[in-house]
Amino acid sequence: MSYRLTRIYTRTGDNGDTGLGDGTRVPKDCARVEALGVIDELNCAVGVILTEPVSDDVRTTLIGVQHDLFDLGGEVSIPGYTAVTDRHIERLEEVLDRYNAQLPPLKDFILPGGSRAAAHCHVARTLARRAERRMVTLGSSEPVSPLAQRYLNRLSDLLFVLCRLINRDTGVPDVLWQKGRTL
Image (cartoon, rainbow, N blue to C red; front, top):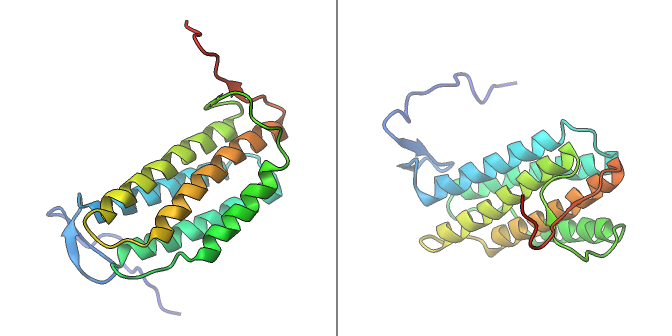
């Protein structure tokens, strides 16, 4: 068995550029690297949720999401490469519909919070939205698969529903927004 990473540091990025998956060198603050960075942050945030007690079903879903996000990062790191397919989005929608059917309809807006796991899930949700925005920015200057953007949009929806589901499963109520409430 060979090892892919024999050294962690290469010094090749010390001048503010980095290598993409195809070997191209680009500035570390370019739109593609920015999108990659937020996808990585999102994957880390999902990992934080997984440190909390969540149901086995939610755990399996989130581990699958982490693998999808790694695939998406690979797609973004290689211009012209596509990894996210319609099936990725269909799977999210199937899980989203199944989880949402278990919850009462929303009558109020929900503030981030509730249980610790749900609060972490809200952070992941906002990172999914930021990743989607970064993909839109990248798409304004380079070709980007519309499936990647759709996946991130659907993922943020799923994470919102998971926030509610996690709160329900832990017996902690969602934090409802109260219009006009002040300190």
